[in-house]
Image (tube, rainbow, N blue to C red; front, top):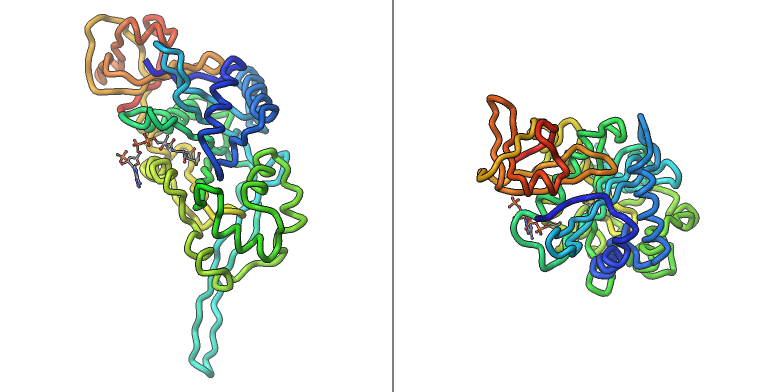
Length: 339
Ligand SMILES: CC(C)(COP(=O)(O)OP(=O)(O)OC[C@H]1O[C@@H](n2cnc3c(N)ncnc32)[C@H](O)[C@@H]1OP(=O)(O)O)[C@@H](O)C(=O)NCCC(=O)NCCSC(=O)CCC(=O)O
C-alpha cells in the first residue's frame, strides 16, 4: 500500500535523493544536507507541538510504499509564511495612460513588489518521483494535504497559497531572471534560487528594483513567461485549479511563476470529504477512496478500493489490511473522499 505519513530523520537519504531529482527552480528543496536535515527536524517539532494558531511551523510528509519501504514522493505545508523572513511577490496591476487631446488610450501592466501573502498557509514541495507518475498517486499526494489541514484547521490560516514553479530550462536559465540579472543582479538564477531556498533573502531587498516595473519594458522573452508554469509543473497546477485555486496576479520575483490561492473552507477536497466511523470487515471493494486517520504526529493516509462508504450510516467499511496500515480500530473516525 502507499502510505502518506510525517517525515522522520530516517528518511534523510530518500529526501536528499528527491532534492537531487527535483532539479533547478525547485526552490524549497535545495541539495544541501544541513538544510534538508533542518527541514526534517523542524517538521518533527511542528507535528509534536500543541498549538491553537499557526506561526512558523512546517509540516513535511513522505509517500511510502509500505511493501518495499521505498519513498515515492514528498509534499509539505508551511503553516504561516513570511512571519520570520519577509515573503515577497510581484503583483501585476494595470495603469492607464490616456490623452483625450491626442485620442490615445494605453493600458500598461505594472509589476509592484509586495508582502501581501504574509501570514497565509502555503502548500509546497510537491514531488512524485518519475517512475511513480502513473495512476492515482499524484492526485492523492496533492489532495491529501487538504484533509490534514481540514482536520487541524486551527494550525492553519484561512487562506492557502501555492507558489508554482515558473519557466526555466534544464540548465536552470529563466528568461525572467535573465532580464533582472542584466539590469539589477550579477548572479545566475540557480545561485539566487539556492539562496532563497536557504532562507537567505536579504539580497532581495538590497538589489531588487525599488520602484514598480512597467511590464512592457521587459524583454519579449521575459514578458512571455509572466504567470506561466514550468512544463513539469503543469499537472500540479491542474490539480490545484480543480480544487478551486485561482491566480490573482501574484507572481514569483525571480522566475515569474504564478502564485495561486484559495480559502481553506472552499477547497473542493475539504468540502467533499466526509468524516465517517470505521467498520473493519473482509471482502470489501468499491470506488478508490483516500482515507486519513485524522492523526497529527501519527497521521497516516492511503488510497484503496478495498473499502466502501455507506452514506446512510456514515460508515466506512475497510479491509483489515487498510485498518492496520492506518492504525485504526473499529469505530475510529476517519476522513475520506473519492479520488
Ligand atoms: C505534481 C505531480 C505530483 C502530479 O503527479 P502526476 O504527474 O502523476 O499527476 P497526474 O494525475 O498524471 O496529472 C494530474 C492532472 O494534470 C493533468 N496533466 C498532466 N499533464 C498535463 C499537462 N502537460 N498540462 C496540463 N495538464 C496536465 C492530468 O490530466 C491530470 O488531470 P486530471 O486529474 O483532470 O486527469 C507530479 O507531476 C510531479 O511530481 N511533478 C514534478 C514536480 C513539480 O513540478 N511539482 C510542483 C512544484 S510547485 C509546488 O510544489 C507548489 C504546488 C503544490 O504544492 O501543489
